[in-house]
Length: 220
Image 1 (cartoon, rainbow, N blue to C red):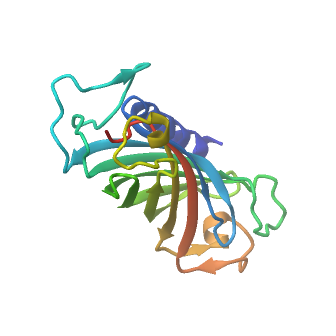
Image 2 (cartoon, rainbow, N blue to C red; image 1 turned 90 degrees about the horizontal axis):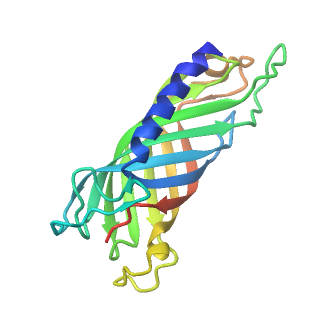
């Protein structure tokens, strides 16, 4: 239990820090590993630096309910892309690995932290991003461990009918996200998850992901 406390505290700190200048808060689904999963969770993404846009007027920062919208580097109108920082927490109740003796605590959680770079297409209704992240796997049935991962993401705004019209705020906020999470490292059932030897061994994992995003700092 003590092993779980520090990562959970770190996640809470990162999420609370990122919540003030939030770019996006999302619910996400990550497909299962060869053993545990699938995973469900929440992600908070902050725009740290925006580039390729127009300089804002002097009075352009919006504050709604104490939440500042836009980039931490300063709001830029119609910017082509930001550098982001993401904090996410995903949990997987299902775990098909075999344990001897059988264990009650088979749940696997993932704390994910890392930067990404994003690029806007089609008048900012489509965004593609790539990043690198630190994924920390937690559970009561095994010793916690970490992996580096590469998320590749496509964001779509399905309710935007006129790409030049930014007056429909709700349509610009609601975003559907698709992607893959590539973990270019081996997983072993016994070594990593404390399960029976031979349950599974992989050299890498490619996990499809899908999410519903609320883009609180959507582009002007």
